[in-house]
Length: 168
Image (cartoon, rainbow, N blue to C red):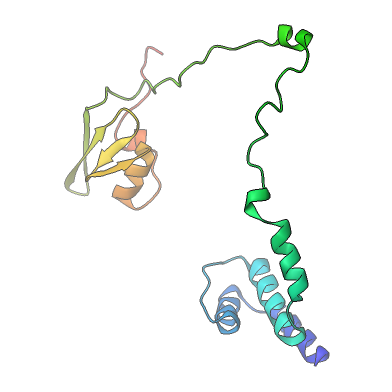
């Protein structure tokens, strides 16, 4: 049995990406969108080995779940973790003033409509305080709007003809 599995794993190394994708669908019962040959090879090899030799024990699975419990993971440090601990530290603490993010100088005022002709049709986008509105949907960037319109990646400022000002 083990020799047969080793031969099958070796044959995977010789397969093309499209052959590996078909093998993945066969082994997992669902298609993959991955095109990375080493990734596909590793996933298929793992699955074949698991089918031949068995999965990890239930005890190991429970321990892994215990270790990876989401509520135990910290995204931020606890409150006060970096607070000054002594009066001398407090004296040296410098509070920097908050500066709001500058609005890009290439953008016109909120409420302005940006327009252009693309493939024979007029497209218009409304400039919002934060983001843009196109066809009733809000977008965070002009690039996202340009990509929605064209179907490919475009620099939004270039697409709508907003260039840096000459006086800057």
